[in-house]
Length: 369
Image (cartoon, rainbow, N blue to C red; front, top):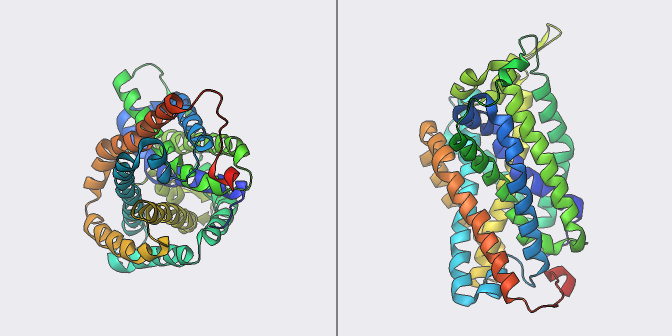
């Protein structure tokens, strides 16, 4: 497999964590904790840092890439069983990303567009990138972050118009701790998407320095989601933000610059679409690579076509029911992701710590080559 630069891995880690929250997090947190979403973001920093450390610890104490490292540390039977579970959860992220963006596009941009045609336009670029290899995908994602991320954030800040009221973030303290805990779980579940580093990290040029790039990606993620959550609240208030399907899009639609530049929501769509391509391509690759590792295939590319068909069919079935989608995003998906991407790696790290002989030097796959 081709080598990745550390900056490419940084871009991959950030885009996998940030794209979905950019579309849905403001609404979800407003519905759960009203104006206290920014408190939730601050409260989620410690769990996020723990996940960063856990992933790095697993990396430097493993000789194989994920999910092969499950067999390395847990044995063949348990490792392959868990690897099979991870395949389906990675695939779930692929389908979820397709469904969220399709709903975003169909409900705001072209409501009459056939779902199947839209999904083809989303899937084909990622399909082509994966067929050309991970290195090509990583280079495209690097360009996306360098160009699309600043544009997406500028569009958010343009939403701070005359009606902006910072007092809508107050008062502090009128919340239930159970709601805050649920919000922290929600944010941490998106942070856990950084688990892709266990597959991609060993193929970087300087794996020993990955912790710096992992921390940098997480720091940028925290700043970004804080902005994503705060601006809709100060612009609309928590009650209105909670009932809007995509508050970020409404901010772009309502933006009016100097009285003559308006209707810039198409620019927002142009910024979001490459991000959706990125998270789709990354988790699609990890899904196919995991299938290759678990079932001993010669090349992950043979699974790109079958998984594309499965993802497209599932997305067509799920896109029409946006209410069901938000129930899943609020009630089901966070528990799945934090369990599989968060709790399981913590247990794996504990197993590694117990089994590792005292004084044994650590090393990654890339170090052993």
